[in-house]
Image (cartoon, rainbow over all chains, first blue to last red; front, side, top):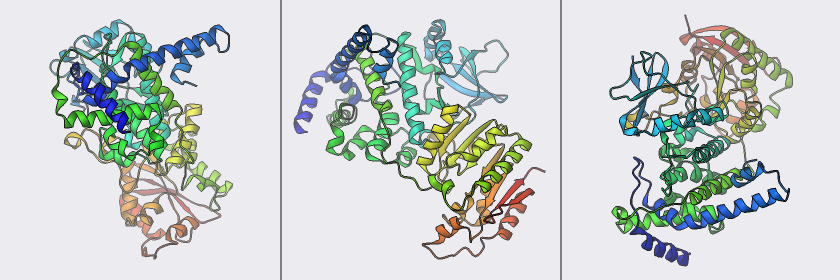
Amino acid sequence: MSKARQYFALVGAMTIATIVPAHAYLDPGTGSILLQAIIGGVAATLFIMRGYFYRMKGWLGLIPSPVEKNRLTGKE
Amino acid sequence: MLALDPGSFRDPGGRIYTHDGKIFRAVFAANGNAWADAQAAGLHRKLADLGLLLPVREVAGDGVPAPEGAVHVLEHPRIPFISYPYEWSFAVHRAAALHHLDLHLEALDSGFMLSDASAYNVQFRGTKPVFIDHLSLRPYREGELWTGHRQFCMQFLNPLILWSRLRVPPNHWFRGSLEGIAPEDLAPLLPLRERLSWTVLTHVVAQASLQRRMIAGGAKNAQAKAASLSKNALLGMLTGLRRYIARMRLANAQTVWVDYAGQTSYSAEEAAAKRAFVAKMTDAVKPALLFDLGCNTGDYSDAALEAGAGYVVGFDFDHAALDRAFARFDEDGRPFLPLWMDAANPSPSQGWAQGERRGLRERASADALVALAFIHHIAIGRNVPLPSAVHWIMDLAPTGIIEFPHKSDPMVRRLLAQRDDIFADYGEEAFFGAVAARGRVVETKRMSDNGRLLVWYDRRS
């Protein structure tokens, strides 16, 4: 756990200099801003890969294509 | 007479108000062009057609009064009964969370996003959630952060994690903390095995840790070049949360009263007779809004709806019963909303100026009610003097049916099993006396097999 904390603290320290609060009336919270900066890349990569995965399944006829989007969001 | 809604003050871009019993929304200059852009893009119509967003109609020029500075005036249909997240059972809260994410994803498809993630903006029409804050929708700018992320965690994700992973209903906590449950408060409660999930590790544990560190380090005011979040990253976060929440289930849901109907005190004939009596009252009164106090899984709400009640709100203390009721009415789509309530401590008026979130009594008055197998829970279970219990019930609706089980009833005996009987005044005579002090008895019905009494009261005229 302490390694993970060190990791987050390090990445946090690196990103904090590039943060500005959003314009909205709602304070997004510094922790949330930093978190988004940190996990954004992973979230984007996973999202793109999942998209390819379901599209490929669609091409291969393993799932009907309208189901692709639902699989991405977990819809039943 | 124009009356501003006391709960609609946070966004300077707009304000909800009522006039002539109708619901309006004023849009102010602070909203910029967000409303107009979304309207021009056909977003409101698209989302309303999908059942995601409350319908809206612009009424400027129709002679409707508006607060000073209004740029647009909008009219919305009325939600039959406003509910708050601390009154939701698990199934209701989960449905609201999924709805919020679905709306956000649909909006992004059209190039718009949500500026916040308040659970109070999701309301219910029966068991179907609907989003009510049109001014939260604004054009999406490539690279912008998800401003509502922390709020989404506090008002949707964290309560649901507390519930599904730790088996603790969040209602008491949420009711005291109207902004929801902060990651910093939830994280220390999570055992190691729960932290292994990517969603919990990032959205709860890491966010809590970052938030604490930044506040401790005084770095909150750091300002420089804007951080950015790609659209794929935003979509990844939203779809990831949706998948996680869609998979949530309550393990081994325990319940106190769910099997109530199956227990010895209830025979099929008695249930049918009660249904018939509820139907008779409902048919005579034709209530637009009916309260079912102690609704359990909704058997008598069902009877009331069949007999023509316009909308039923069922209240119960038992989350498992409410979840079953939710599933039952969600399937056929009839207008029934199950809500959690401790009758001995109903939702108060609270929040800013004690008017932001309204108490049960201040929010709406029902046209009729049924309180079956209910009164002994407060009069004996919670020591509320019988006349006080009767009057509290009767004050909630001008007419309705109250069931009075006498002391030898098995369910009352069960409540008395572990305690001294200090309820010398609990009896039919006292019950009728209390009813007569507030109204008249329209009709009574005695259950043949166990002697329970159903009393149809009316306090009008």
